[in-house]
Length: 261
Image 1 (spheres, rainbow, N blue to C red):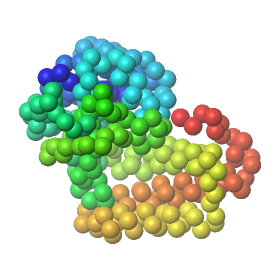
Image 2 (tube, helix red, strand yellow):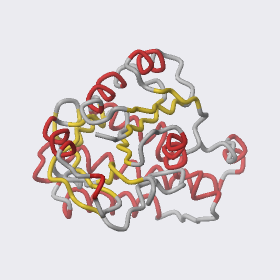
Image 3 (cartoon, rainbow, N blue to C red):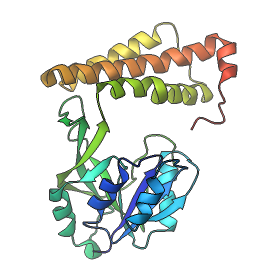
Image 4 (cartoon, rainbow, N blue to C red):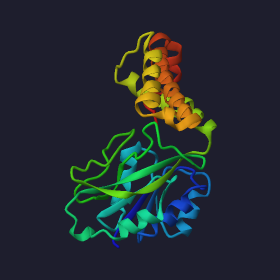
């Protein structure tokens, strides 16, 4: 089947082999766009036959589109390094008639995991995303955060990919403080968005209610509560940091707003 694979990486030596090997069930061409790994990611990818492109990180969608100058086929399968095709998904893709397909892309269901636990509540499943797409017609949006394929005509595939989102609960709580919330706050501040003294609490509460009540996190037991709390903390921190930028010039001077990524 004439499908190219696309993976972006940074220090993914523990993930890259399994990701590539799952892709090889349907792809005869795989491009890894690496943003400066200092571990064995590049070595492993090359050993498995992938083409490695070196590119400093440009942001999510822009980085994923870098591969399109190096892929051999117009149909591209894009996975993150911590994602895998299931055997059922590989079979479903192999049965597609892509040469005559009229759609721009195909969407997959995604199983998001904490450790080996599949989280089915809190909006984490089916979490559909377009990952197989015709690059003659569409691509990822050229945005730096939370990019998606901008396909107008999409066919759903009723099979799953697996996303090893977090190794454990500790990592789930560490990431909002270390990365996501601070990045989001810097982006909002750079755009001139404002927060007030109530913003952190209200946004955090809203995130918890949305995950735990409306997206039925309460059905997921401890894991459902944990995911809802993590979402609330992430949202709280995002607006607390934005408010701090507004209130404390000494903090604002510490950060380089030209280097958000």
